[in-house]
Amino acid sequence: MTFDAFRVRSFRFQWSADLLTSWAFEMETLVLGWYVMVNTGSVLLLTAFGALQFLGTLAAPMFGVLGDRLGGRVMLCAMRAIYAVLAAVLAGLALAGLLTPAWVLVVTALAGIVRPNDLVMRNSLIGETIPPDHLMGALGMSRATMDSARVGGALAGAGLSAMLGVGLTYVAVTALYVASLALTFGVAQRRPAPRGSSRWRELTDGVVRVLTLPELSAMMLLAFLINLTAYPVSGGLLPYVAQRVYHVDATGLGWLVASFAFGGLLASLTMVLTGGPRHPERATLIYTAIWYALLIAFGHLRHLGAGLLTLLVAGFVQNVAMISMTATLLAAAGEGFRGRVMGVRTLAVYGLPLGLIGCGLLIERIGYPLTISVAAALGLLFTALIGVRWRLLAPGLRL
Image (tube, rainbow, N blue to C red; front, side):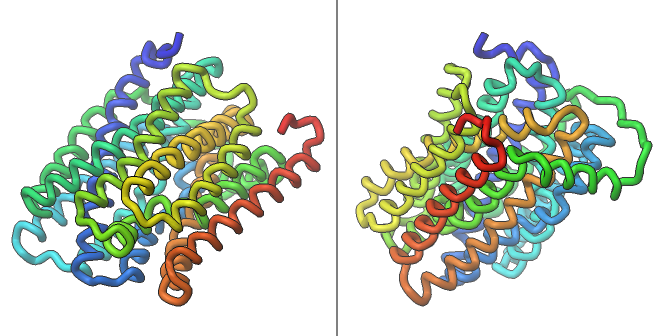
């Protein structure tokens, strides 16, 4: 059945906790991104804000080792407690009238050490608790938590900050993190793995597995490429697009973010209802290529309505690609390696801050439309090259 994953008690708690965490993430990203853009007027500081959210990507493989050893629940509880504390700090600063862009960047950097690894723990827990026949559906439902958050969280963040201000909005964000932490305690506690080798040896084993299996190495390269050239356009640069291209306020920014996310949510629901593509490897490459083509078009649009529609379709195809990628990785990782493989996968997110900074520099020199065209065209080219290389290394693969 379509919703068989919800028969697993642990998944019901995990899904609910992940949903609240994702809503808080999206509210924070929109509220603080708009705050930085309005109070500094600098696209470079905006891209720096986006980049700081991913500092923890370098530590992701070790988070994966700890997840395999201690269990995902222990890691998620610790991480979500940290989110709640940092959100409370920002709420206190804002309510006291002491919040500045510098404080935003400092707290964002601290949260960025932990936050990128939340998805590592979510996916490894799904791999541990869900039978293989229901994996794609469970991943689709898990992805739907993030997509619904990008729709509802973005609009809620924009609306609350406009009505209540940053301080009271952050009180709501803190409450979401606390509720998420409480629900995470209901997730199944796996027994700690035997400590037969050192953490560094376990980490090395995970990296070697990624490098030696063609399906894993190809997905890692593609994930890095997407974060470098695609997600900056459809994510971190949207505050710039809202203010400088479409000339709208924070509510307009919320609609841009929500359009991309709603497309993703439709894709997640489609994957749940249909069971996903029969060949996820092929789907990952094809839908990634379509995404890049849509981004090239988006970079040259000047009407908000057309931009919203394009982002909606782009959100749909990117989510089919990302769910298919995750299913491929979890299936190929094998028992006992899922946390480490997903940890290495998170390293690919390091391409996002590099892409954000690179796009910020290029926009100031060659303009927004040309920057987006260059980034998307390079992404399209290298997606094709990764597909060719993968086919050569694994001739029996049906791409």
